[in-house]
Each structure stands twice: as C-alpha cells, then as structure tokens.
Image (cartoon, rainbow, N blue to C red):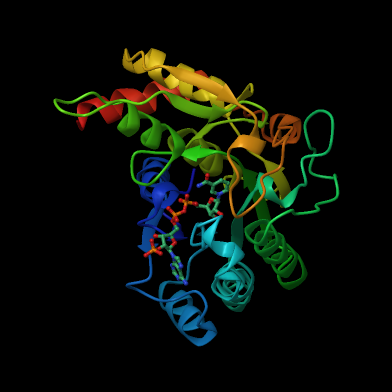
Length: 292
Ligand SMILES: NC(=O)c1ccc[n+]([C@@H]2O[C@H](COP(=O)([O-])OP(=O)(O)OC[C@H]3O[C@@H](n4cnc5c(N)ncnc54)[C@H](OP(=O)(O)O)[C@@H]3O)[C@@H](O)[C@H]2O)c1
C-alpha cells in the first residue's frame, strides 16, 4: 500500500507507536520511528529539521503526554506536548508536503450523550488531558488541510501501561502475596482498543487521501468491570472482583461516563472495521502470558 514511501512515526517507542511501526512496514511503507531521543515535538525548529531530513509522505503523531491524572497538575506540560507539539508536527508536515495523522481520544467528549459519539458531535472535555488533546486537534485542523484526526479509546498493548496489564498484575497469585478483592468501576462504558488492531486501521486510513476526522475503536462496548472480567476469563484467573460506582473510586481527573465512539464513518469511507474488543483482549492476554 505504501509502495516504498516514507512514513514517520513519532512516539515510536510508546505503546501504540511500538506496534504501529511493524504494521506499517508490512503494509509496504518505509518506516522511520522517532521518539524523545530523536527530537522533541514541542521544539518547532527541531521538528522541522528532523522532518525535512527524512521527507515523509505521511507523519503519524503518536507522541503525546498521556498521564491523564497527572495532567490536572502538570497541565503546562500536557498542553505543551498535546497542543503545541501537535501544531509543530502539522507545520513541519506542511513544510514538506506531507499528510499528518493526529491520534486523539474519546476524552474530548464529556460523556453525557446517550449512545455513541459521532465525529460531528461537539467536544466538551471534562479534564485537562482531554482539553489538551482537543486543542491539539484544532491546531492540526487549522494548520494543515491534509490531515486525519483519529480518535480512539481505552488503548491496551504489550508495550506500555494499560488497564488489563494492571488488572493481571494485581490478580496474579504468587507465594506470600495476599490477593485482595478487586474493586472495579462499572458505571463508565467504552470500547477497549487493542493497539495492533488500531495500527492496522491506521495503515488502511493512510492508504487513501480521504482526509478528515475518524473514530477507530474495537467493536462493541463494556464497562471497566466487564473488561476486567473478560481479561481474567481469557487469562484463566478467577480473583474476587466487585463492581463499584465511580463515586467510590475518585481520581484527580474526572472521566466521561460514556466513552462510546461511533465507527460507522470508518466503515463507510474505508470499508474497514476493527474486530470485537474481546478479540483484542484475548490477543493481549495471550502475549502477556507468553512474556510472564
Ligand atoms: N493510552 C490510551 O488509553 C489512549 C486512549 C485514547 C487515545 N490515546 C492517544 O493515543 C496516542 C498514543 O498513546 P500511547 O498510549 O501509545 O502513549 P504513550 O505510551 O505514552 O506513548 C507516547 C510516546 O510519546 C513520547 N513523547 C512524550 N512527549 C514527547 C515529546 N515532547 N516529543 C517526542 N516524544 C514524546 C513518550 O515518551 P516518554 O514515554 O519518554 O514520555 C512515549 O514514547 C496518544 O495520542 C494518546 O493521547 C491513548
């Protein structure tokens, strides 16, 4: 699909970036991966210099400040990376005539809608991270016509911190460890999305210049509690697990109650759908078990 053209992946050593690079290579792209060691996306001159050195056809910006709770206090850093960094990448792309994929999030929405959010629903973030990501989207939209904004949710992959990894670590029995009952929030719903499945969707998206905003998440939906139950079922573990309301698990950053993203635009424009979320959870657990 990429026919030997160059794709630059920023945040290449993060959870999504690590899985995205090989998927793009398999799709025929010559992939250049960059992370903080290569250049800092908040440094406009460094971004321009790096991009003009490798002259990509497309940049997939997976670099981000992703610590949702810490962003409530470290908002200067969150905004610098997620807003200014996204703008810098759009400007650097414009300078070499490249397209840009900006990865965004369900957290741009406030969660008050009944049913899944479409790409046309108005964002209204309820936390600093969500606001920084929304500003990043806006900066990309006004800077570069040839952009794709791809919103996803509840990411999990082998190469980073994620909810299923935390659950498996907490539930793993070992001698002398007291496995306490796990209390997991059951009144927030979303679509757990496996990074490899998202990476394949991104390869499809950049194969055609159908620019715009897309929602890309695994099919179906569940609560965090149901997600945890499915992960334990796949792992053959049976810890005691108790569903609780969010009010019993206060976090510095409030989360939207409803994180559901409607993916029908992706299906309509590209004829592509991600697999059911349970398949992503099963693949994740399979690889996690091999590595433990
Ligand atoms: N994780 C989720 O549940 C989730 C959900 C929805 C959307 N998203 C979005 O999906 C994308 C990928 O997320 P992820 O979970 O893969 O994130 P991640 O694991 O935190 O990876 C982000 C990468 O970007 C790097 N980075 C941070 N600041 C940078 C800078 N100034 N310049 C260059 N690189 C920088 C990080 O390096 P360090 O690790 O050294 O800081 C890290 O390698 C992000 O846009 C995120 O907002 C994530």
